[in-house]
Image (tube, rainbow over all chains, first blue to last red; front, side, top):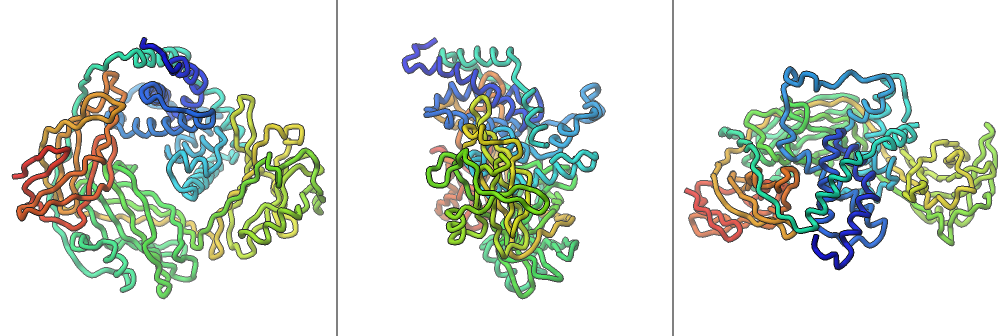
Length: 167
Length: 443
């Protein structure tokens, strides 16, 4: 390993431990797949060591990891090799099982678009405000609010269909 | 309830230790300066392109809207085609009137006319989704809708939908525009109070409170916030802190003239890891024209975890949202484009190594698109994309008469980029295209 003059190597390992959960959960929220989340997870931390960003404080660190995770997750789906579809009859045992009882939340999150899921996760799990989410996503605050509003409505509609309104 | 369930669900989701260790090893490899090996992946073919026949005819929209469309299209107007697609619901007629497509970029002009009221205006917000009728998603790039104009005489809004494509939109494609909601008079406002603010901060001391007839405890307005509210915006926080019931409350004064409002009050609370979590104040009590929001179970003993309270309001002074089901199908006639195979190495950005091979150009009267060989986009792991900013390689298009054109960047991503011509061109007049100081003759 190269000489670690500025202590970045040790710092990178600390950041891996500290933000592993945040990055993985956000990637999972966006991709809704373990495989996708794992790919995005590795991509994010490889970008960390490739770009060596100057992260001034914890707030800046968190924002950097959120932003890069979203970007990597977007690239993940833009990759045409992953967008290739498979005929249903060829999927065999890979076909998803019917939703289990108690999985209403998963089922309705699956129905949201990836963009809406990201906003929901940043708001409800990471605790970001709508202006902060707007900053992370490079969108107008009104657009973030609109996404949040649409997500809430879709979640409510879907859960009410199943008789379990929880939004 | 949702918030709790969502948190509980995601608290259970964590990366495997093996994944973390694999990632650590790969980070170490990068930090040690290990070189990446080139990797080959199966190439994806480009879609075939067919020629299109264009028609120009009169628009169904009125003269004001027609002028707005013509202004927006500019010199591209002759390439736009008339569209006939309309539907009605909730007393609103949605009608597509014009479309312009050259495969990579699509514009659809459509109107929303309130047949029986005045629920729309020049600030109308629209919620809609776009897909292709033969696919259940929009398989291309981004799309957005903006309002171009409003004609009060006919009570009609004009919108333009702009979509870009990472794939070509094939000839004969039919777009499906699904409008869910229209909201005229849309406004938004927010206000944030920091818990540690000296002037209006939140303290452990209970604020003056009262009880409503149904027994709910609510805050009384705080004079300093109330006077600021009187001079300020249409929605304001007039009290924030702990009420005499021991819970966190925020009292909001709505705008008198709001016909519809959606108010959210959120507290940011630090969790055990020190991360700020947003929690909505969900218990709402109307009181003397105001709204009191309460976060039950969050008392003064937890004040050190509270960082701020925030009010977010979407509202309209004109109308309630008009929600309905409007679906229109819009057939596209794409402007013909020509394809040229090229082999051009473009350097990756500074933080990446190597280069990316550009493999083809698509030239239409409206735009020029550059596509890269996706095999060359990846590092050895097959997953990590090389960083390359195609936007900066602005092409120069040389015409037979010696004119050199520099089209304007329109859209793109990591492996394709499109530039639009300021004026439509005749592709037959193009003799060469220069990108990154390399000239490609066009025969």
